[in-house]
Image (cartoon, rainbow over all chains, first blue to last red; front, top):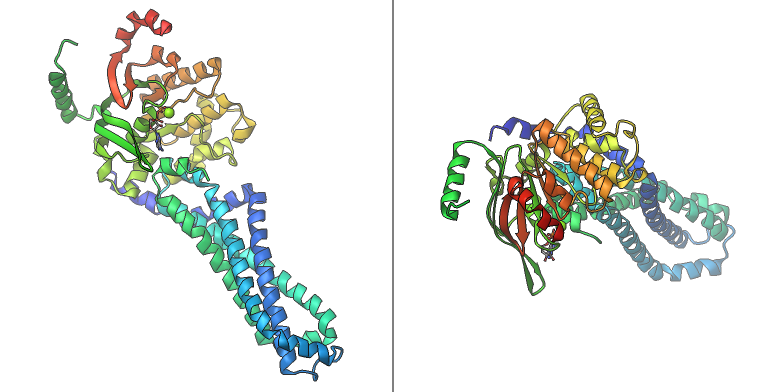
Amino acid sequence: MKTENEIMEIESLPLGKIISITCKGIKIRIWRSLIVVSGIVLAIAFLSYILCSDGFAQNVSKAAGSIVEQGSPEKIQELKDQRVQTYWMVGLAILISFVGIVNAMLMSVTERFREIGTMKCLGAIDSFVLKMFLIESVIEGVIGALLGVLAGILIAYVEGVFTYGSGVWSLLPLAWLLGVVAFSFVTGVIITVVAALYPAREASKMMPVVALRAEL
Amino acid sequence: MKQSPEKKETAEQAEASLSTNYVVRAIGVKKVYTMGAEKVHALRGVDFAVRRGEYISIMGPSGSGKSTLFNMIGGLDKPNEGQVYIDEVDIAALNPVELAWLRCHKVGYIFQTYNLITVATALDNVMLPMTFAGMQQADAQDKAIKILERVGLGERVLHKPLQMSGGQQQRVAIARALANSPSIILADEPTANLDKKTGLQIINLLKELNMTEGVSIITATHDHKMLDISDRIAWVRDGQIEKFQKRSELEIKEGEMHVQ
Ligand SMILES: Nc1ncnc2c1ncn2[C@@H]1O[C@H](COP(=O)(O)OP(=O)(O)O)[C@@H](O)[C@H]1O
Ligand SMILES: [Mg+2]
């Protein structure tokens, strides 16, 4: 085919261009994007809140009595007994975040199958579709996870003040706190990107009519 | 027309091999949809050829296989059997990137339901295929505005689809189909969602583009307003082409047509 050069041109639609198309897309459907992001925020806030509260409980039982000034010894013993419970609370928190984010992303991609089909009719190559959703989900994942971590930890500390008194501020070692931040953030971003990429990849490989027909 | 079918086919084949006179050729195309245990034979072996610059209408009742044929000859879906050539390229031999290139440069698609990106402006909709073709933003914008003016939407460039009437949306779709100066425009029931008057305007616009730009137009339709302006009509029934008719053959029977 005499068109070899031009084929290369399609293939190399520069990343900057794809990013700008994607950002424009996020902006024009800003409310939809915000709903997706808030889903991620909620899920990750819950996860980081549970991790943080669990951190308080663990450290309290380690240094029972010495750090906490206002908490009663009975209360501390009770918290110690709850350790087993909190393990599955953390497991549950991860599961809930997972389901919440996957649900939000699946919806946001599948409701755009028609748009994907249309773009493929107009000459979009599969990797363009994929990159578009990759970039979009990274942006949403990073913003959502960041806000979620902040919100979750804030809530945990506010609640901590009531449970443990002012000693709560020095209860968690900094490294521990950073660990909670990093784990929640990375979990949020990874789940978001994977949950978006799976349906996006399926859709990008479809023949255009199939994507156009896919009503979910 | 007294020719035997066999003779006619060889003549057509000879012509095709001599030059790239045909923009689209379909040979023995079959399509079966499987829905659970049930099989729907949507196309039962269709031979179809469109000459460069021709305006051809695929007519037939609902469910006869027009859209399926439309999808096959546009490279939007794969046949179970048979070949489709677009500009003499066998599209089954293309990889996904080449197929995308073909859709981008060679074919413009128009649908009954417009299929515009509803959140984007008319301008952005028309610019999108140009972006996929690698055109610079500024050039694409100039060209898109020119095309939108050409289809009578010079005043609506920054409107979004939902702020426009059906006829205007279909004009945006036509402008978008023209974006990369394709050799073929494929239109599936372009007037089905429009009232009579608007439908006629769209049909006339398509005909005008066919005359001035020399772009081949293939419409799948059951709108009889299409008959007057088509060079040729392919009558489809039950997944097969019943017959081809030239416009000249049609005019004699026009009275009959309206009775039908
Ligand atoms: N995706 C599909 N799955 C199953 N059957 C289909 C599908 N698309 C079309 N058909 C069937 O194939 C036949 C031809 O349909 P279609 O090409 O849409 O006809 P037309 O466009 O002429 O109305 C019909 O019987 C229709 O029910
Ligand atoms: Mg149809």
